[in-house]
Image (cartoon, rainbow, N blue to C red; front, top):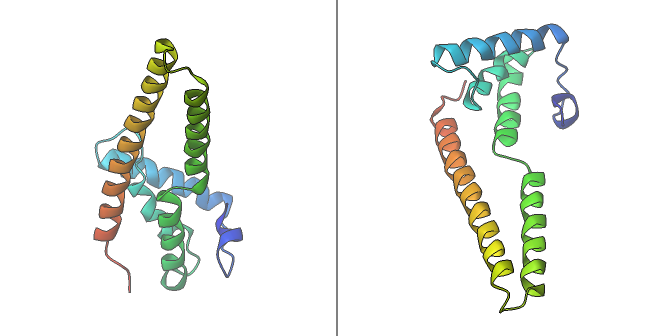
Length: 135
C-alpha cells in the first residue's frame, strides 16, 4: 500500500523525492556505521515525503510506524505454515519416529524465527517510542 492510497488527504511522492529518500537512507546507514539502512532510519522519511512538514509529517510518521510494525500477511503466512504442520502431525502415526522428528524440527525452526522477529519488533517499538514527536 502507498501513502496516496492509505492516508487522507492523499500524499503523492514524486520520483525526485524518492531519489532523495534513497540517498538520505544511505547517509543514515553510513552515519550509523552500517552498510544497510535499518527500519528505524526510515523514520526520517516522514520529513522527506511531507509536502507541508507541519501537517503531513505526523501523518506520514504514523503510516511508517504501522508499516514497520509488520503486516497481517506475515502473520497469515505463519498461520498457513502452522496449519500445514498440524495436518502433517495429525496424519503421522505415533510410531513414525522419522515423521515426528521432522515435525519437531519444523516447529523448532518456526519458534526460533518467531522469537527473533519478536525481539526485533520489541527493539523497534522501543526505539520508535523514544523518538521525539514534532510539534
